[in-house]
Image 1 (cartoon, rainbow, N blue to C red):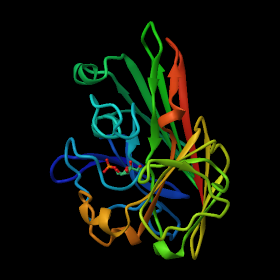
Image 2: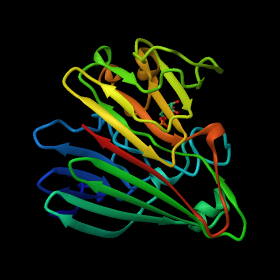
Image 3: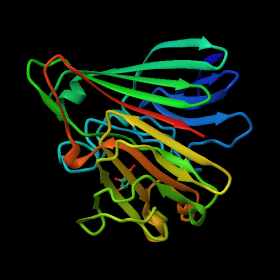
Length: 278
Ligand code: TA6
């Protein structure tokens, strides 16, 4: 089943439920903020202070960073405008008893053209099943090529930050946004301080190993993976985030970020896909 619902302030979201899982997806930003399978907790961490307000990015779930990741382009907001724009609900397909696909779309508007002067169509597919699958397709409607960077900025619920290990990034080169340097590590990643890294050449599987479960991330059309945890100091300065929230989530973001920008030719498409399983 699926239903279009509203919070008291009119903020719209879709609830999806089938025999495998349930989900909640805000029309603003095409932003999934809940995915629950069987008796588990919400796979996606959601801040208790999340604002479900027009024009304010939800803190948690899977924000879409598009047409830019980060804040290198001064004419665009941090992580681009997609996560605060209203998507259209294109279709909901109840494929079978355990799979529901939600299709959402965003096209350029006078506002978006003002800050990013390109005509585009963005289509987001979210498949809710035993796995959670996202595909973000960018179509270039222009007569010339344009460049994007992008990410599924996924916040994962974890048992505790001290319990997790991230595998699959060993020996991968990364840009350290905190130290403004490039490096690589042979060890699997544990989080015991603020971490803000853009790993490159990450087309393999990444594992988020927690105490009771291992979450697997598989991507297509993605060359970068971002790992972020604000730790104590940054967390206390983050908007819509309790000061101790750093203990409860880690972001592993499936991306094409910084040097991994994507050039999309005229009338062509590029798709970023992610499958999350556990
Ligand atoms: O993906 C990591 C990051 O770029 C961090 O530097 C931090 O800024 C985080 O995203 C959250 O950004 P936001 O704009 O959602 O507050």
